Image (cartoon, rainbow, N blue to C red; front, top):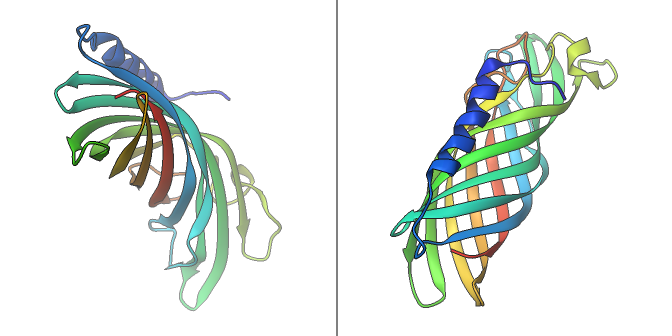
Length: 213
């Protein structure tokens, strides 16, 4: 996969610099884990005349986190995620259908607040920024067969910039191991494709298996 955007390079370097700069004292903690879940997304923008059904997909990946101070932590992840949407485009009454499937490697950088509720349950809330690097984009436009986005009027898929926000509950199993149940909303900031105004927005419903924090 080639990354041609200078902004992409800057974002990755910045994320690495933030993690390197956060060097906690011995009393501070760090953790890691894996996550699995489902995404429920749709497409928005000038290209969309009528939104159709929610597009469901898979989310899976891993992450590392580090406590900054008190109940504040930083979290960076690397996930594979499926997004997209379907509906109608064009001018009424001359509309025609679209169905877009887009897959990404997603790199979210999150700032978390951890609030203890009891001896075993904690509340987690977070927000941050993310970059999603396209690995596949296929579309059906009108009556045509499904083909690569770059070969349609949509144009080539691009790196997507987004704002992830969410929260959930964590349950401590023991020995520093936790199970986290969460919902995350992804707000797309940039166009999915090169030639149309088309942005992803939607939810991720996640189960995290965590060690530490």
